[in-house]
Amino acid sequence: MWRYGDVGSMRNDKRNGLRNFDYGYKRGGKFGQKGSHGLTHASNYRKQSSEKSNSSRSSSFKSSFKRQYSIRVTPPPESIDEVETDPPSLVGIDQIKGYENAKFTPIAIPPPPYTIRSTNDFNPLRIPLSGTTEANEGDVREALLRYASSHYCYGKGVAKHMIITKMDHYNAFHYSLETFTENRSVCWVYEAYLGGHLDGPMAGQAPYPWDVHVDPPIAFDCHSASVPIPHTDCLRTCHICGGVGRKRCYTCIGTGWENCYSCSGDGYKPHPFVQGDNERCLHCHGVGKKKCWRCNGDGMSSCKICSGTGQIKCYIKLTVNWTNHVDDFYIGHEDISNDMVKQVTGQIVFDETSEKVWPINHFPENNINKASLDLLNKHVESYFLMEKPIAQRQRVFRIPVTRVNYSWKNKMQKFWVLGNEKYVFAPHYPQKYCCGCTII
Image 1: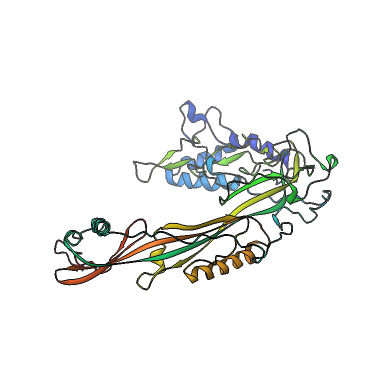
Image 2 (image 1 turned 45 degrees about the horizontal axis):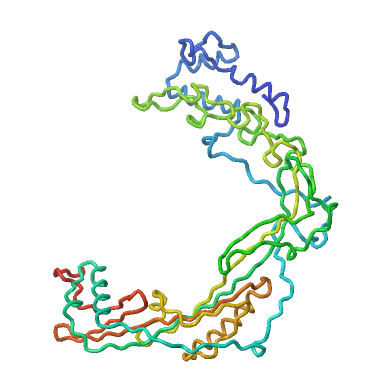
């Protein structure tokens, strides 16, 4: 047997490994009997196994095989991959000006100082609100009819024959503030060097992170991009294979062989039709092991880190993230909760987009003015320190709400119709069980 790390012994053992098993069954012989190519070295094992039953022969084969060859059982090839490796050391890499603290983990870089004008320096022109949207009797009947149709076993007679006594119209509001920002981070990365030009420090000084031009996406659309920092390339010996380009195969642990994943190294599997009997494994032909699929029996595989070249290219990567931070504020009504307002949309009555927007101060609903000031201060404190603001947008949506009072079978009831979708809120709908159903 080969010793761990003894390449010569390992290869000799791989060459002789399958010679311990008889392939005579291919010429008509049975496993356990000496075939035309059988060897004396394995004759005692085959003689003992032929005297036992199929089940005991399988267990003896398994224990003897695993004592002689310590190969781990592996699943099918498509589920095997190498373990993740640690990054190389930064010792020996020349320091890049402006990136002395860069590592193989991302480090956020704060943006250059950003000057924010005071709200007293500029006061944009705001146009007062105009126009109203009210639902008529036909709209509320149609909305209630859709509501009844969408619920199982709800009767439609209420929507068709109710007597509307009164309709009250009022508005709910939704204030939205968006801050579109850009943040940048840098880190060292490495990849296999396959030849080509190296853009190293000798070509010039590397630009600072916020001096690298990266085209921004559409405003208020989250996106990310990664680009290499110019003049930061350097060539190093692969830290995994030591520059050889090959390493011990991870799948077979350098043996060149692996246990058959179908029979787990036994060579035999339970017979599908005869209980207590075994049949020869068709994947390994009863041997119990197969040539390693990754290294093809060589025991060595190409290094994935350097792709077999023995060299890697290290450089600094810049990652740019564009994020849209959104905060909302809702104003409902004494009859309608804010959660109900969140489910519908309304008409945009105020829309302002700028590099930096200012608080709203002209809105008739004073709570909107106060929410605008509070949320703007929150965004400045939360996002303007480590991120660069690109644009801001604030909008106010007016959501129409109609409260309908009606009479049905001499009983007074009411429901609400909300938003552009004509969403109906009818918690006391009188005709819920049209077929005489009852809730158990």
